[in-house]
Image (cartoon, rainbow, N blue to C red; front, side):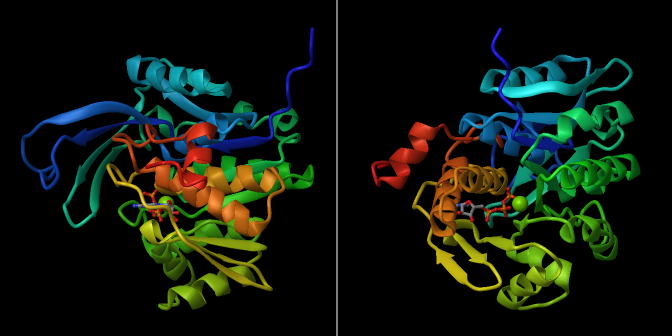
Length: 319
Ligand code: ATP
Ligand code: MG
């Protein structure tokens, strides 16, 4: 029997389905129609994209023993994610997020997450043997925001990976609807100070540092510990900061169908690019391409691209 490939990238956190308003500008406060369920959860979108891009990866999290849970796990498995450490809980239902889009580009969520199966994590899922071999552990602020047991689990996993010579990437992915800024800074600090790469949006960089200028806020983040700050700028592309340099990397023109998940796809492209040993400029271009493709389909995880699609957009053959 051949030896299984080592798991190079792991992420952990909330697994959920997203149920979204069919039309824009239909708030969640009135009766109306929804579409879904779509598999979702920021760390899940990240890991699914890593798998599609061809890197061996695994996920730690929990679903309920119901059809929503089966839908998520099936999707991740089919795309090649190792699901050994995803638990299915008979006493809890799978997490759900309802989302409404406005024509000004903003989104509003109602989360049924922290008290659902998504909010549960047990000590047995943070396995030393499993985590000690990974090259990158990707942590998301949304998972830290869920509850105390998830925070502890993330900190523990970070400790194991760091001790074993692996690296940490961190998407602050802040949800001010769930936690106030002071608490967000407090829970992010242990991850920010131990991560190699942080991948914020402009608003997140400003919120974490308290600096109003996005450029200065991003530079300040380097002082917190990471070697690389990858600032996500939506359809403007990304800016990449290191102690020596700042790269301004343009985006790819695509038709935006659903912006949710772009950041998670970008993160996946970035980590995969780093693991492939590309130059930072090429890593950012690759990540921009993966992020751009992420917005071209309805549903948070539906745009997660395959390598052929990324090649096409990088070569200017998309349109
Ligand atoms: P989310 O939290 O919804 O996942 P985010 O705010 O973390 O998103 P964005 O900046 O929206 O992340 O998107 C990440 C990356 O994806 C951008 O830096 C860019 O490279 C690419 N991208 C996003 N939206 C577009 C778009 N409309 N056109 C082209 N590229 C895009
Ligand atoms: Mg984001």
